[in-house]
Amino acid sequence: MPTHLSVNVNAVAQLRNRRNLPWPSVTGLARIALEAGAAGITVHPRPDERHIRRHDVFDLAALLRADFPAAEFNIEGYPDERFLALCEEVKPHQVTLVPDDPAQATSDHGWDVHRDADLLKRVIARLKAKGMRVSIFLDADPALVPAAKATGTDRIELYTGPYGHAADAAVQASELKKLVATTAAATAAGLAVNAGHDLTLDNLPPLVAAAPAIAEVSIGHALTADALIHGMAETVRLYKKACGG
Ligand SMILES: CC(=O)[C@@H](O)[C@H](O)COP(=O)(O)O
Ligand SMILES: NCC(=O)COP(=O)(O)O
Image (cartoon, rainbow, N blue to C red; front, side, top):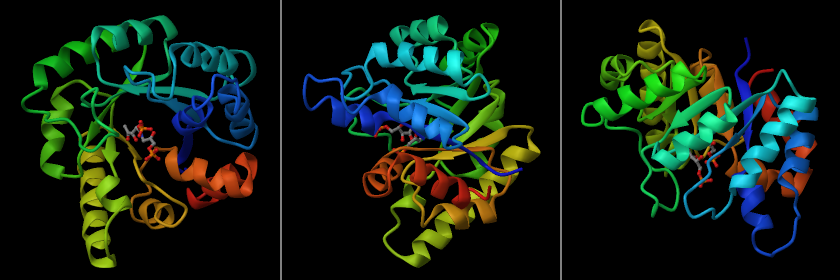
């Protein structure tokens, strides 16, 4: 089964937010991505609404419900009360919990699954009780898998930043090894595996070849940059091919 591609539209929203104008259209670009074969859409509404705004989340949910019922909506974020209430209202297919501080420029680490075990258990049970699948952002380290599993999560999302922005080939190869080992440990523990952050057309094929069990990648920054060159539809086709299908 090829790895599913979820298109993250944060960067489309960030470009739109430069002006008080409705373009580029977040739902319009999401529609093009889904028509071109993306399996889903991802957003990471941050508290300062620097890119995705609250209304985008509702607009995208309505788009998927009306016109792309087979596609999945994935909402990422830190589980404060505002975020949890938003998820409960929108009911996406998947909620990805990320340990980001509001001041962070972007996500740069996974959960401390030991220190934050109680918070994660409580929040995951709450979201799952409302029918949402839950994934937690995790650094590539197989030793973290047992504690991740103990939180009750359905999936982990491997933080691929250190692989994606590795300074040289040797570092990238060593990061890839960690991603492969963590995928194997998670799969053996009965957890499905997603991956994301700084994935590109260049680094995606070696990742999915080495870890074909990865169920889904969510990609935004590089994919949006490529869409400026190739257009969104062609870019989604290129990334789908890079995902193996
Ligand atoms: C959770 C994760 O990996 C992030 O990639 C995030 O969704 C990106 O957030 P920004 O688009 O705000 O950098
Ligand atoms: N979960 C990762 C994601 O949605 C997008 O990350 P990036 O491709 O913008 O780095």
